[in-house]
Amino acid sequence: MSEQDTKQFTENLPIIIVGHVDHGKSTLIGRLLCETGNVPQEKFQELQRLAESEGREFEYSSLLDYLEEERKEGRTIDIAHTYFQANKRNYIVIDSPGHHEFLKKMITGASQAEAAILLIDIQQGICEQTRRHCYILSLLGIEQIAVLVNKMDLVEYSQSAFGQMTTEILEELSSLNLKAADIIPVSAKNGDNIVQTSHNMPWYTGPTALSTLGGFGKKDIADTHLRFPIQGAFDIDGQTHAVGRIESGVLKKGQTVHIYPDNKECKVLSIKKFQQEKIDEVHAGECVGVLLEGIVPQRGNVVTDVIPCRVGRSFRAHVFCLENTPLDINANFEWKCTTQEATARIQTIYNKFDPAFVSIDKSNSKQILPGEVAEVEITLNTDSLYDRFSEIPELGRFVFEISGNPVAGGVIL
Image 1 (cartoon, rainbow, N blue to C red):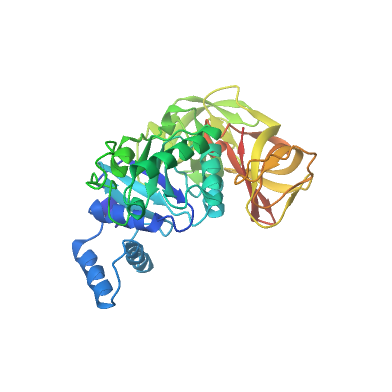
Image 2: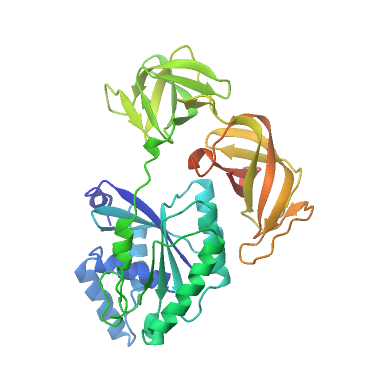
């Protein structure tokens, strides 16, 4: 899909499709793309003819290979995401080859899903990877979840098999305080209950997968408090402006704001945007230059609209290894949260566990091993502003780096 195509609708909903390997994710994405009219008919027919000429069955997952060719030729917006339009909105499907990469993208800010499809093979059931994905959805506060029980054709569309799997899914989700908007029996291969209601399962009277996605809402980060991390100071028309991206809330000309971590109060004298004039108000997601009265802006400062904010040198968080090297207690890391930087240490490890297993290690641990999640106390060497991830994600997530390389990520509790 071209960039021009995505501008037909103004609302974007980023979704993540997660599931154990071989549970049918690529087939599901291909089916959604095709049945929502996001693949040219001539290209679809060409791929069908190619499969027939090679003596093999056409697979909807092959549509992703077609998209990969488009990416290589520069005809799509971005190399990490797949796009489709339906329900008068743009859906952005975040690529997640595994829980490790999914977690890394979400924590580092490369992607921010607002809804999820959890795909489960009716024959294989809930696997180790499934449990890890469920835990990550819980940890990151993704509350809009559609569960698709796939490959129903392999159990002859059995209502009893679906009922048994539904019981297991509800137990798993409940253990993590997650709720599914709907649990839907589907066959991505045959198209049952993906976009159109299946005639093979007359006993199922709930919504299709696409209908459930259409009921998901878009989170409005403009309704939260203002957070404007300053990336740098630049001269615009002979005056020094703070330049950066509005991460949440609204910034208005003439507004009284506070500059953290020093809690200086000032007024917004003017707002600049590239090739735009007379700007009185900007919103989350916009990159701007702001002239602040009596303030020399510095990278790492954060502009806010309220006091007090959470400013300090110590906080509790969940931390995950992003590499194969253990994290040692009291080792020094480079802490980065938006444009803020500090030297950080893991002061205390309260507990840790692997999301795929039930047991929790509450011993006096000195290391966080790859694959583990730990609840920890973190200390910084300087005052910084931070928020709970559940409230303002951009100021509630961070990375640890060593020599510029991300080694861990975390969310603030």
